[in-house]
Length: 416
Image (cartoon, rainbow, N blue to C red; front, side, top):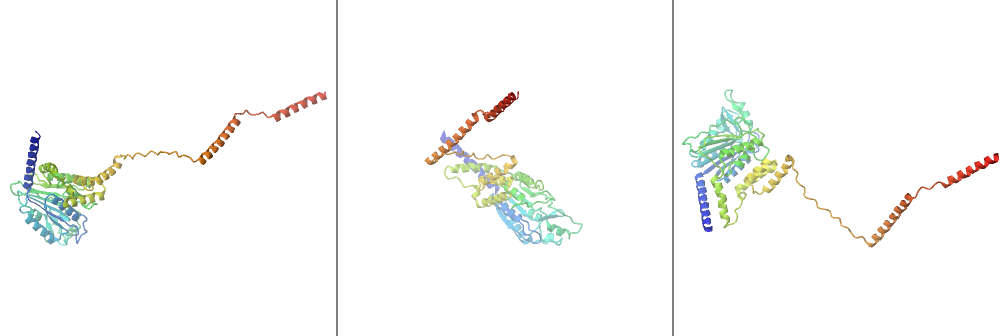
């Protein structure tokens, strides 16, 4: 019976492993283009896009993507990366584009701005910027899935410069315009476009190393078993809470199937069983945080949490790395931050009872103390005797009164 149970469990493990391998094979080739522009020549530098690009690139690499990454790209550099991505993603099953930096909408069309852009003429929109349509054209055709994520809705001084030269017939609006996420083909693939905030609204860089949007993406985008649209819903909730409702991410999609940037449900379920089977013959595998790419993501999430010192950021770190290098410290920080909010008091450790030791006196000290005690006792006895005696009459006064009375009587008798 025991042998049959062992054979049966081995069969189940092999079937689950085969199913997970089949799911992984079905995912096929994954390619991502990640660009973050911070150091603008003709505008104030943005603090976070370059950091955001590194964070998202590391997150996607950990999920099995081949990442083409560029930071602080000029016009030629951005077009060069788009060309390389187009070639690599041509036969991919899943392609992702992430851009962080300045962007603008003119006449309902969106333009992404390289770091060397000089928008002193309306003609420069065509020659010195990158249209989002170029990103759309770089995505693979159906039945592949293409995803574009835009964190380009920041307050843009270059847009104000351009507005001064635009004719009145053209309109320049804040933020980005919504893009139609339609796809050609039989419809089993599709396109998804995600924005850092609502159409026409402004996104925030935040006060930390990364923007609130990128930090939430790194937390949810590659969660095992979480479909991408559910992940973006969680991203929206986190960013809305972090910005107190001032920034609300959104997305539109035309997907023909569920898309998982992380492990699928089947892979997530098969992985623990496979690991449990390996532990019978080999030591426990190292934690996810030991991988070089995952280590970079963990370090960045921890830097963000420790800098902001807020509970949601510590929880974001623990959700991604529950057994990470800073997990214990994160939980302690959460406990400490919860004390003033909930009114809970941390019980102080019990105080040690002070034991008074009776020390033996030396012979000389004992004799001295006995003499002092005898003197004190004598004084107490004398005070007691004096208090107990009744008050004495004044004898001198009585004697004088008798003599005086006798004299008066004798004098009266002699007179008569």
